[in-house]
Image (tube, rainbow, N blue to C red):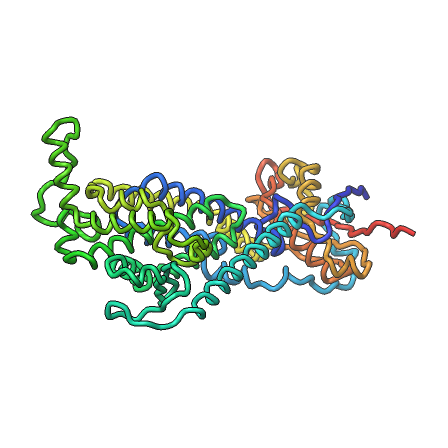
Amino acid sequence: MNTLTAVIQPGAVPATALWQGPWTGQMLDALLRSSLLLLVAWAGYRFLLRDTRWFRLNRAVLLGIVAATALVPWLPLRSTATGIARWFRAAPQAAEPVSPGFEALLTGFMLPTVTASVADAPGWGQVLLLIWALGVAFFAGMFLRDLGRVFARLRATRPAMLLGQRVRLGQDNDSFSFGPAVVIGRRDAEDPERLAAVLAHERAHSRQGHSLDVLMAELLRVLLWFHPAAWWLRGDIAENAEFLADRAAVEATTAGPRDAAADGTAADGTAPSGAPSTAAPDHNTAPGQAAFARALNNNPALPYARRLIEHQLANLQGHSRAPHAASQHSLVHAFHQHQLKRRIDMLTHTKTPRARLLRYAAVLTIASTAIVACASEAEQDIQADARMHSGNHATPMDSIYMVTDDPAEFPGGMEAMIEYLSEEITYPAEAKKAGVQGKTFVQFVVDPDGRVVRTKVVKGFSDACDAEALRVVEAMPDWQPAKMKGESVAMQMTLPIAFVLPPKSE
């Protein structure tokens, strides 16, 4: 009997079997899908939505990107029942008991024996997964460290009542918020005019739950620490939270929603009904420049913008030589954090044209396409799984040929099959540790459509090795079906797989 060799890795999963093999391959494949989905979705937001003033909609989009990136690539979307069975299947299909008269069962076309030998080097999939896991551990440690420092700062504050609101007074000059806690720095507490703006800003962060947004982004950044878009998305979420808090602070420190519409925009960035046009005047003419100056002076956000500038100048002029502790923690919302110029621009800019709502539809279309693309291969695997297990009894026994004019053939021929097996087979760790070697005979039928069905182990030597041999045969792609008088027919075949360990060095 001819013998072919397939060199495999102990416990490794090849690139061509990332979604069919053990959990290592599933992890790598899901990380790749998450990375692609994140890149596409983040680019759609960055280039189409970031400059719009519908901050609440932008928040929903950003959090949707986080949720989709973290969940979609791990879950099959269209065949839930089959997917649950596949994900929670404890092990490959168990080997069937060896029947008496084994030699009589070896009917049909006998393929050459494939010898599975163990290579010494670890699989690249395991190496990549180890690097990823080390990175996750490092950044998770950094995240927990920052979280601990934030709670330590909160414990160092004391409760107080300022402007009729319950807050906490800090020991330094930094004002910030985290969760429901609002901390006011000493310098801000001593200046009533500044206090009103700072308190309204930080209270908006607390009331709208922006800390949860930041924590979700931080966890995604820990998971995808290697992806630049994960870091950029974290910045975009914090930036949009500042825009929302700034707008709320403007409404709270002026005459309320009436003033918020004075520049022709409502709280969600749209023009109120009956409001005059707020199109920017021509600044190249004297009347245009005067109109622009009047519009700027009448803008209700201008006093708050001045407070932002004064607060930043006070920090730069050395009112506190100590480093700003709040700015050292990415988990809190500090009043002086983030780009001052962009915050003022988003406050005083004219309204976003309604036509730009179409951009949200475009981003939704892009994201939906990316989600389907990232989930489609998983769905194909689920369908293949269902086909393999339900198809085992689909072909009547009396229509299966043992000898045909043209035997069934693996796509690409025998060499392609050996390459597939060398990449797909995983030498079971427990068998390798116990020094178990032997040969497993897997019998199967290639039906008239080329599908591999009726798979079973007709002779084996180890439960783990037999199950692995059965798994790789069930996972085979469709074959070229056998031909009998020019018509495609079902053909029974037997594949011997020999599991061989290298000799131990003295």
